[in-house]
Length: 379
Image (cartoon, rainbow, N blue to C red; front, top):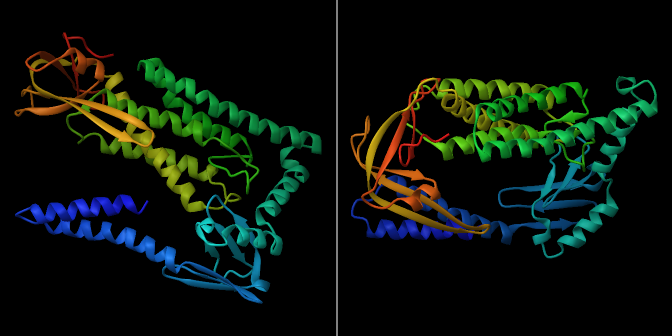
């Protein structure tokens, strides 16, 4: 992780050296990015866990926390971190980050497991006992077990069903698939409300017995947003912000009120995930509704291809290609510009060819345009 900002920093410093006019913002960015790998190295060198007769001390980059053994309530082990929680609220929680990077990290984890209570296990036992003894979830223990099992089954079906639904949008956006995707996240919210506390937006099987519906709520909004970005370009965003942010705010409130999972902990990451989900849905749904339900036929402008580019990006997950055309001025555009196009259109054209720019007014008065060939309006 430290190598990426280090490489970027070196590149920026090199750019500064070559540039005649040096901007302050570029210099500050280079310094900040250079500081990241430096701080990572310092943290690795400084990070230390000291176990004494009656206490444990963790020394990090900017802090040093210690707890008496008698003040430790128990431990939680995450994917990369160990959390030692105190009995009293005034005492600090010791978070041993990336414990496996320590010289004796695995031995430390094993010692903590033997020395202190597993809070995750205790929480799960307590939550299960509460469900099986509370009449809220059924008149008998057998009925409560069925309620619990039903909640998890419904959440699983809901999450899985979102993927073929998203596929219908990928294969071809139309009014029917759009309406289904617009409604689907609210079905998830109804599931949360009907679950009587057994279904939440997110969950963690190590700490919470609740089922989760995050995949089913997130997938439609993310698909709508990505499809909007791939389908067309927005000419003017003046009328985009109000509806997109209003829808995002509404969805966030609905998810948060009933969907926050306090038994899972990690409230801040949950809220961040809710915000990102709501924003994806808010902007994606606004852009798709604006285009798919546009009542007017788009205006068509014939433009010439001045040049074309194919960009190849090699990433860890594979090679990605993007395609763009530089087209002549058209309609409200008074200068040549570069526009992204699908690979299929890129391969059918070359410099000097004529393509069509379809300019739509939009249902919500958010003007959009898409480049096609042979005058065919993209569906």
